[in-house]
Amino acid sequence: MIELIELSKSYGQTKVVDQASVLFPPGKVTAIIGPNGAGKSTLLSMASRLTDSDAGQVLIGEKPLAEWSNEALAKRLAVLRQSNNINMRFRIRELVAFGRFPHSKGRLSDDDNRIIDDAIAQLGLEELQDRFIDELSGGQRQMAFIAMVVAQNTDYIFLDEPLNNLDIRHSVAIMQTVRDLAHRHNKAVVVVMHDINFSACYADNMVAMKNGEVVASGSVNEVVTKPVMERIYEIEFDVKDINGQRICLYYGAPTPALALAQ
Figure 1 (cartoon, rainbow, N blue to C red):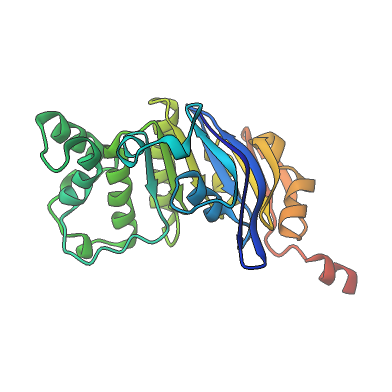
Figure 2 (cartoon, helix red, strand yellow):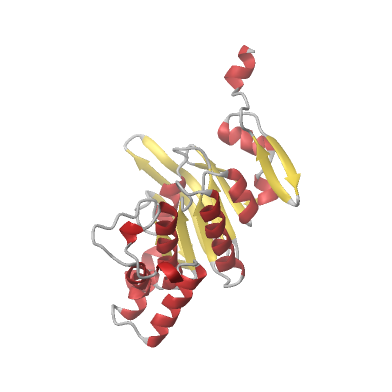
């Protein structure tokens, strides 16, 4: 389990994350939601040591993050950031093989190659594995980066907005993979997302943030409620249970200011 205890981060006079405390349990998908500027990506960056925190503590398996060596941490935690720009020209298989570097140090064993094969198959990239990354669509490229994370074979996986600019088919495929990693392989998977309904349908737990604070955290049914959603996004929401899923209706909903003007 990963536990964040009262994490805080400021840039100048602006507090980006303010005493945030959450749990990321194994075998569960946890989605972090909230408006732009809520502190979602900063929280994930502090939890993975990509950004230093000003206060608070991160525990990974009950061990403080500061006590983990980079080598040991890379074998336990894999991170996919929002921007994944590669200047060199790689084929898909070569990219996915980078996920094994913490284990192989560049000398791939038969076991490493088997894990790479499995990751490529899990993301449905077998027929594309010899193509160059710059020849792929945005969705195919994102699937390749997630295959690299899968090949790293860690207990904890952080994905920062993995569905950006993807069509529905690729988004569904990625979230099905995310859920499989958690439920079938008992990994703690944390996903920063903007789409509330995708989050509600595929996550087990959710963390709702606004202005750097954790407003609500818990199961989907505990977080995806009309009061919480309206507090977070400041527009009217209608929350429905459809086929066992919590779904938010909000398109065209007036903001409080507009509602008062009508």
